[in-house]
Image (cartoon, rainbow, N blue to C red; front, side, top):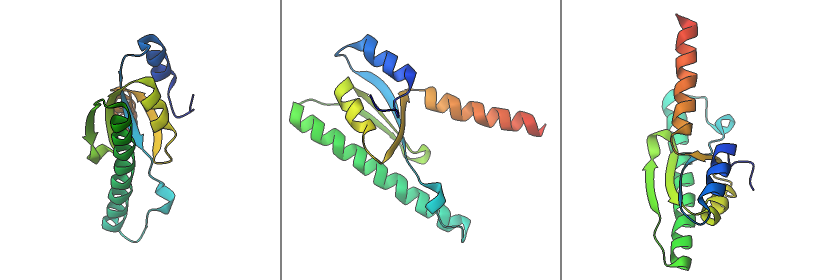
Length: 126
């Protein structure tokens, strides 16, 4: 199993068997390659990288759907760089292999970790 898949998601996949599991896919953005010339240029480049990652994920989902004649529930949260899917293990594992993905976790966990990080940072500044 890919190391991009968190332990919580791996356990959920094991428990689900062949049933779909709802997971959040974090789109990879190489922040070292973003321009430093201006905030606007950096934001534009980040948005372009996220759009390319979402396109790659959606292409893989669509190919899986066509091959299996099945549908997958997808929610795109572009501003956060996250795609949520309710999918079986084989699709989730294939999405983890895409270079455009950085982490896959059970839905909600990526939000919690980002929110927790913001809360810790805010608490330190008080």
